[in-house]
Amino acid sequence: MNVTLAVKQYVSKMIENSGPGMKVLLMDKETTSIVSVVYTQSEILQKEVYLFERIDSQSRDNMKHLKAICFLRPTKENVEHLIQELRRPKYSVYFIYFSNVISKSEIKALAEADEQEVVAEVQEFYGDFIAVNPHLFSLNLQGVARGRSWEPSMLARCTQGLTSVLLALKKCPMIRYQLSSDMSKRLAESVKQIITKEYELFDFRKTEVPPLLLILDRSDDAITPLLNQWTYQAMVHELLGLNNNRIDLSRVPGISKDLKEVVLSAENDEFYANNLYLNFGEIGTNIKNLMEDFQKKKPKEQQKLESITDMKAFVDNYPQFKKMSGTVSKHVTVVGELSRLVSERQLMEVSEVEQELSCQNDHSNAQQSLRRLLQSPRLSELDAVRLVMLYALRYERHSSSVLPGLMEELSRRGVSERHRGMVKSMLEYGGKRVRGSDLVTPTDAVAKTKQFFKGLKGVENVYTQHQPLIHDTLDQLIKGRLKDSQFPYLGASSLRDRPQDIVVFLIGGATYEEALTVYNLNRSTPGVRIVLGGSSIHNTRRNVMCW
Image 1 (tube, rainbow, N blue to C red):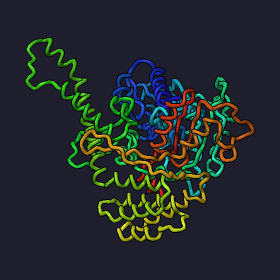
Image 2 (tube, rainbow, N blue to C red; image 1 turned 180 degrees about the vertical axis):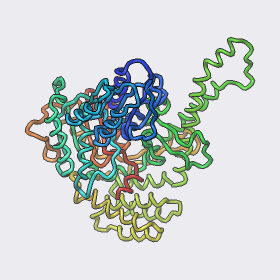
Image 3 (cartoon, helix red, strand yellow; image 1 turned 90 degrees about the horizontal axis):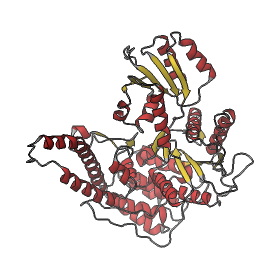
Image 4 (cartoon, one colour; image 1 turned 30 degrees about the vertical axis):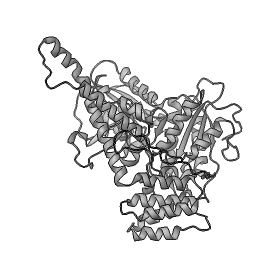
């Protein structure tokens, strides 16, 4: 159950099928993202793909010496673009791959347009999702709901994305959904409809224990996307924003030109792969070790290249040295900027109050800590709104709630009316009235929030107490204790045995904290394989701006 490998194999097969010779890869906006997160341009170049073009580009030249590999979503627009392309072909031969099921009528329209008989192959390769990590996928969709109902086009896109994941992983699952969410039920029914309609595609070898698809709604746990994160990948997304593995660092003070945008991919960056899930303090130590290792391997300025052997050794080692140099400068820059933001925005203090609000049951202490922090001039507007949202979700029905006073405090701080209104919107979205489960499990003993790892100076890590709701849900599911009354099966049958292959989908977006939970459950539960997906991957800024 590895979504990264599944998409990689599809792309490799497309290139392989086209045979030897120079090729162009023709994609749309979405498939460009799908391919770019699993393959670097240099890796594809090694497979004789020398040109990357968009199907909707008007400025493409005729290049009859190139073969065209088309990887496209089966949308009306793409089919129309292809019809126009085939009427006036720019390349010698076309290998066409759709990322999902395409209708017979559209295949017929393409065949009629292919008067010059340039199409060698048309196939469906089900890579209709972004493979973020081996166990995490996203559909990169914002605004999937209108109130508490589906935006119609988004229901169709989520259905396509989810069925594509199941086909890529070769799973025909039983389906469970969150009863308190009508959107979960609608998506479950929509996926089931496609499985029934395309039953031949889903005719995989039966396993002893059938796979399971569990559909959940983000509104059941609105707290997790509001919390600061302290593991590397999650922090990068929270503070800098990861978009298809790319980070925009152009606003970093004094940034050099070649580091204005960097790529962080576990597939091609060993340091990143090894540190994805480590806490920030450990990253600091590991960056220091990486630097020291680099210094040892750095060619000495006085190094004499006296013989042909010396020169050959230098040239042989240079590409590796250059790659290491790029890795070092990239991660030192990223960690340095994370460290600067943690200090500038008082995120250690903010995180401590967040943990108090989300995990403990001491209203008096929590509101005092929150009021004290709201007085700080260094607290950003986003962090102030985030903290008041957490208080509202945690203590919305407390007899001594001070929410009106906190809203006044936001107003005194100059927080815009739009941002203040988001607190009410968040309560309407994820408050007690709409939640299907008990989100907050109070911790009586005040656990230590801070645990410092001394590594690089200025890099300290907070170990958080919070565990996302999905941890308990999956734990109960694996133990066979998840209540049918809250998470019913779609249809009459149900699983008698402990599930082994589980795909979880979060309507409204997943988080890297939840991805870490799934990663840890996969490691600690032999025989169980879990893949997590979401309509998007949240950070606080994206989450708050939804409201």
